[in-house]
Length: 424
Image (cartoon, rainbow, N blue to C red; front, top):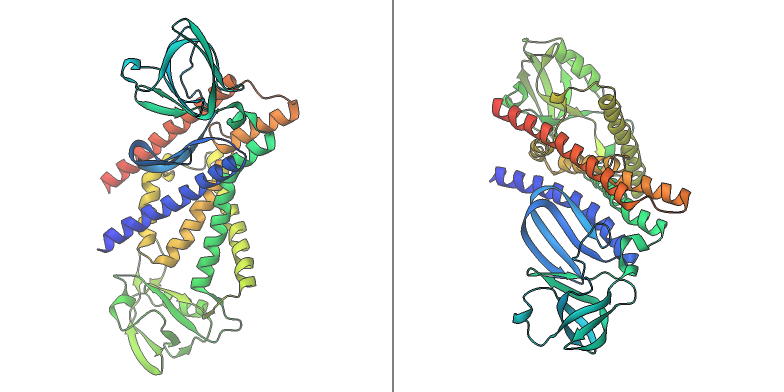
């Protein structure tokens, strides 16, 4: 049952982080009037989908990301050419469906040869029907049907490229921005759950107890207060307690412990741990805490954002200057593995980890790497400076190459993760 809960929490963390990111793109694109064709969580084969208000919401098999597909970003619908025979269905004197194939099986339609068509600007189609030419208005939400697939047309004013540089930049930046907001909120939730240290504390209490270590084999529980160690009063000096433990490897120690109103003694023998100096008993000492106020929560959340950001950029620096080996890098498999281990430590630690993951995703996506949000913002910056957009074909090639390189790196680290798991 615990394993099922850990798996559920791990998947939930990734689902929330990715969904919040993509929702940022989605919300600001819709706000700018852009037609959002698909809101997808995951990649690969489709598991579930439904359509509402012009957008198809899709859940896909591989939970390693997501995307929001906006009209006009890529070639997306089959072009209808003059001389082509099609069928149209009308409602209130406007074309609501354009059929490109299986014309003989279509009912309640008008079939004819296209003489002229514009489904981006003027929204009309001229059909030669049995020698008579008719001009029909095309509804701005008309559907094009071919090979069993329905695709809504996208008038020019509903396409991504028709919007101002500011609107497009906001639609792109909103994804990372939502990750930053989520990280700030999660850090705040963590602080509310854990509290903040009491000023001028008078005691040290037991925090976590490591399974299999000496502390787990004696009458010791999280929340117990350590009063004395070998007759030495500890007070609030956790460093003094740690020093005494380090100096007592393989030597029995006597501790005085306070649990509520009950005071008792235990005997515990620190052991040596490979790779560490001195004795260890397997506890994490904690100072007393109190509930944080709203102001303190906001302040400490901000500090957590700053310190975590510095740590993330330090990791990027080491990667750029080759201070990492391939074995040090982790892909989705390792991230899932680490998240699962943290989920076993409790909801508090998982909340903190989720905040870091959300912050990392936001920062990573803003890097000027082709195919990421940061690269798209760079191209928009060039457009703002030059006064005209970069050639879409050249931009697409850059993003394609960047995406291919990212996928190769992802395959390499995923292979390494799987190999490491197999070898144990």
